[in-house]
Amino acid sequence: MIGRVDGNDALGVGLLSPPVLIGCLTNSCMGVMYAWSLFLLPMERDLGLSRAELSLAPSLALACFMLGMMLQKAVSTRLTLRGTALLCFSLAGGGHFLFGFWPTLTSLIIGYGMAFGTGSGLGYGFALEMAQFAKERNRSLAIGVIVSCFALSGILISSVFARAILHSSPATSFLVIGFGILLLGVFVVFKTDGSPQTPTEEIQERTGSEVFTLRFAIMSYCFFAICFAGLLTISHISGILEEIGVPSRLLGLGAGLLNLGYIIGSIFGGRFVDWVQGRSALFFVCLLTVAALLMIRSDSFLIVCVATVFVGLCFGGSASLIPVLIGREYGISQIGRVYGKMIFSYGLAGLIAPWAGGLLYTQTGSYSVPLAVTTVLAFVGLIASIYFSFALMMKR
Image 1 (cartoon, rainbow, N blue to C red):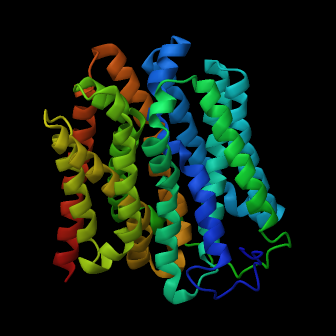
Image 2: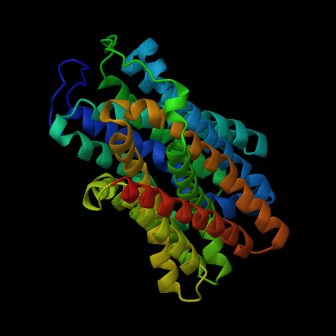
């Protein structure tokens, strides 16, 4: 049985400690966001809405996710870790219930887009905070494992329940997911410490001019381009596979492969920075993103599957690669502060990518244009990453 998470007693515990396991369980629940594409076709069928209209919901959810993540530390300080867990699971589960009982575009935007999105962001931040209780030598790996669990529910749903979701009412699916989130939320809340957090010494922030430099802009744009590719693909992978003629029984495979790549990337992304000497890691991830986007339009189902895994690999890798790279560029003590500003790139990509993909598909009747635009954005990131790496070599 998992013991109670205590903000003081748990300091210095191992990788498989209760706090880390709680973080993994929380992110597994909040990561149901990455299974959105499975609901796209059933909602289009049952609600009679265009793909552009439906794509407003995941765009708003991802923007609210960013907001929730940015507010998480302040919320935990005021409500305690247990209060944060209660709030994030209530928003996430309640948002699904709202659409389940009242299946309209309005409830989808409010329940899924706003409530679930914010709750998911709070939960993601809460889960990462659990990693800080791991021993220092295990901390980077603990972060990678917790981040990878965000895609776990996406893999489970797409591999086990995809057929049922595609052929059942979206409202029913949302009710089942909402019940599951709330049930696991009760467990997490009762296993999380409810005492006030011990304030830690805050590091004095540098001025904005020391952060918002060309270096910061390049890292932020590359992060945006990688996230844009990942989030557009996650939101529309079922539709992309359907367009190239993949049988309906295999449409759920896309989300599963993408999330599998995400898990692998998020676990090893941070370590990849050390393997390839820092800045070069950003170049290789941007290069693989461009290659994957070119491959995903292939007529070969096998190549499309490989490309889907590569997109997930790059997207997941960025989740742990960027914080580690920030530590190298700005110092370990500045990771939280700088990443808190750079996470805007993820939120902007989340706000634009799913909606833009749906809008361009609705206007053109094909995913060729959305994928072409995404490829151009990724290619610009590739060029920027080359300069980023070249500047480092010149300094040496």
